Image 1 (cartoon, helix red, strand yellow):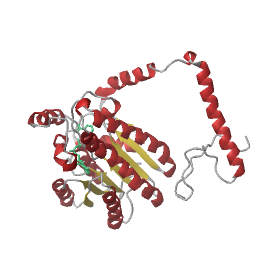
Image 2 (cartoon, rainbow, N blue to C red):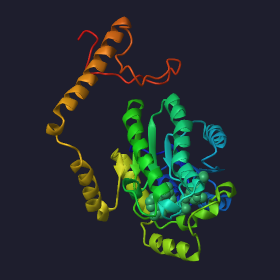
Image 3 (spheres, rainbow, N blue to C red):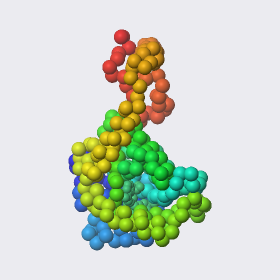
Image 4 (cartoon, rainbow, N blue to C red):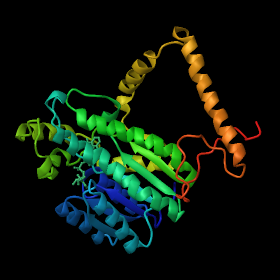
Length: 331
Ligand code: NAI
């Protein structure tokens, strides 16, 4: 996507840090911006910034883990701007750190609930609306460099971010046929307010195994203060969207670490000679499954040839089938 003029952008976490930077940069590019955030004070401040510039903005107080509220927010966008958004940025996130063995259920439920569950809610709420609107669009989710690696202090956060990267890979493969692009932004460090994230932790999930005190907050603040400016990061995001890049990683210092990590994984795969019979059987099974799909397609020659598993329910008439273009039922 290259033209952002008059596009509607819905950005979660849009009242602070990376999300606010995105709202500013894409507003300057011509978008009508909806900022959704759980913090009213931050929303008020952010809204004032756009109003001063006469830029179209709409603020919604939203906890992205609340599915009913999310659906209501989507309705509100359509009422205010007359259409579902063409741009969805899943940017809201929280963190809190400590050893995995100290982690409580509530540490997992809060961090994964916002960082993964909130993204899932964004996708389930908006993707069908965006497809039905038929205008194409773009979805960009902010994961983290931390999603590529486990860490001795980051288990719930890294797990959520890993899942989010993986989730965007799936949607990227699927939504192209509707003209909806998908990117995942993987920052290493942002000069944001995330060291105050525990202020938004709900009371019913307050039981934590981590020591959150002035020292932990101050240490995190020291790290984040040297992070990338949110507007600079948003400009990299914009370039990534213009270039339709799936992964957007504007942190050159991490290239070698990523290379080492993925090499370790690839080097762990057995060579074919270790199990030639197993390899033959598994590949043959895929061929057989393809034959089953071809046989089934002969009975319904007007329907597209699709893999037998993973078909949508037929009443979802806005979902396009996943076709097997390299085959025909006559083969
Ligand atoms: P931030 O704290 O400045 O902004 C996050 C915003 O999300 C806040 O305004 C907060 O109120 C909002 N939020 C939190 N929980 C929410 C909920 N349940 N519903 C709606 N809004 C909620 O933090 P930052 O750093 O700008 O975070 C943005 C994204 O960047 C997050 O996904 C974070 O994990 C990710 N990230 C941050 C890095 C950093 O160094 N700060 C590094 C890598 C990724």
